[in-house]
Image 1 (spheres, one colour):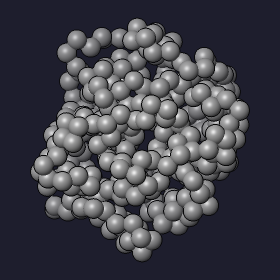
Image 2 (tube, one colour):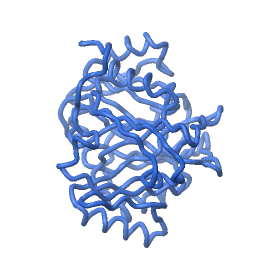
Image 3 (cartoon, one colour):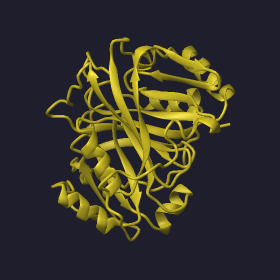
Image 4 (cartoon, one colour):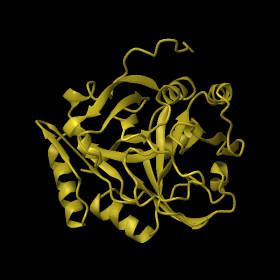
Length: 317
């Protein structure tokens, strides 16, 4: 059984503003919050004196969430001032929205402008912006039949893909297809060779592949121009930006098997959460930043996979 994407995890420098943007502009719903501290925060490779607040949002896809962290100890460090989405690690993701014009209007209210205007792909509009809190690129994709057919899903708001920049595409392909055993996706036209201009990399040269993580694509890219740069040597999982993507299952056997394959490939989590039916661990190695998690149905609501009451002051339409 293939693992499925259940989460994209991010560190934001302004948690309330990020939550407001993703709910008001992109249509996601509040799914609750929790603190992460003590022994649990060791899952991120941080020591037990560390702590953070995490908040979840959900869209139209079942068992799939956006997870936002704000660390106060250690204090969050910003992305480098000259960061680009060619730099190594998880750098951007795409959200399908039914109300594209509303998304643009709500972005404009917050003085967030598309990096390179609005493009059209198969008759549907797209743009990209750099999120002020996360620091990463968000592609806003107008939802419609062509995009839904590509992804095999119903209407949004929905996560379409998450993208990582790597230094060795062949090694990354082996990691995702052999170690994680995710199927290569057909060479669907998720992005043309000119798409990089949308997020500020005009005239970029790159190679890429797609894997299907349960109806959401992981797009892995190696840039020749501009050349991607490695993450800082002192990188911590509390630093601003996209931390990882999480692959999950309903019960332990497929996740336990994946951890064994990862260990054989030289990747071990710094700490495992293994309590009852729950099992989770991070891989924090450079260019291999993922989380594996068993999320049983009985814990979905408690772990932020179900919507709760809207935020106070949120608009109704």
